[in-house]
Image (cartoon, rainbow, N blue to C red; front, side):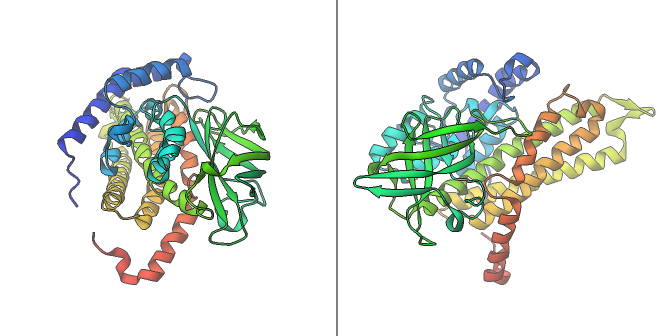
Length: 399
């Protein structure tokens, strides 16, 4: 495995870093840059999105023929990390969740009519999207196959959906939705995935759920379905392939989360390093104290480890592997590293780190979700245990 970036990818990385440093990071200090969910305001977002498009930094993961830049997964890893040095960064380049994962799966499995109808507007930045899967108790969370309550009943050439979903990211601003619903009681093939549009009747957002941290645009919402009618032509893959659709989407989406989290973790250490390089106590700069150096070094080492894990998984994906084991390892490790890096940075900055004078408290609240989203850490550890029990010593094979 050679992780040396190709010249064209390195060029993208450098240009994104310069864009973020020049146009995005300066906005973070201005309170008027933030919307009610503590993300970038819509007017600023549209200005910067236009600029990113003009500079050829838009939708890096999508194919050239659809207006993207055609980067592979390794290329995405290096560039997404740079975008996420700013808390506003990823959404500016159309590389934020949930749109990023939704674009990936629609491009991978959609037929041409579905790509034109549902995918292209998301790539173009004309529509946002959401994936509708999680349900309140006793419905589906980490066990969608066994616990999914929302149903889709066939009625001629259409499906009629009834059910209840919650913690649906981005729903308040989404136009296009991927919906997972039960179409039979088969434990393996009982779920089917569909597309629906915001303007279709038969469903509603009942509330935007308050959360502890800053939010993606559109928040986290609770939805109810009252006989939503979906045409069979808006079904993704075959009847009963819902879990397959979700697995295809979540695999790469989990890894892109890790890419972005590493960028945020690096930025946290940058903020701390700047402070401890200037702050004096007991006759010397904080950076000169061994105890401070140990904390900084430990966090830097964890970030480097996380980058290698992400690159390893990205490389395997680019070789045609699903990389399920490698993605789970990266997801657990990088989620922990994000918290470690930000917590370390706050500790090194003292009271200032705990205040809103820096971005660290924003990052700290945001980071707590990392061990929950796209599969809780415990679920991934269970997956890894199964791999280990099945593979034995081959769990650690090279390549």
